[in-house]
Length: 132
View 1 (cartoon, rainbow, N blue to C red):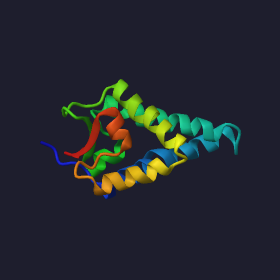
View 2: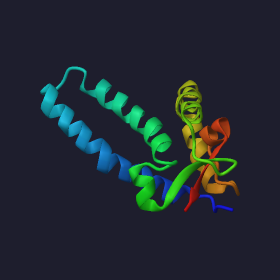
View 3: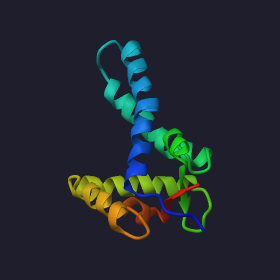
């Protein structure tokens, strides 16, 4: 049985992903596109692809999660598939968008306070983030 990952380790993994993957991608795009047009959209699209595809390809890990020793798994302990990650990202994102971000705050409290440490997008997709 895995031990669920709490708020701070998950936040650390997100920040590491942003620094290690997001920042270099943004800088490269800025150099390629010059200062501007479409840069933010391309960066957002690449970030979305990263957050959906890398966990599918890499058994539930992103670079930040691997460094922190945590990963996304389905409730049966299996790595997430593309359908699971699409549910987690898009349906969860829809909930967060419809609530104008209030659900993001609720999710942070859920991860910090719930015994199973699952957020709204985890509940939607049937996933959890666990320590290795």
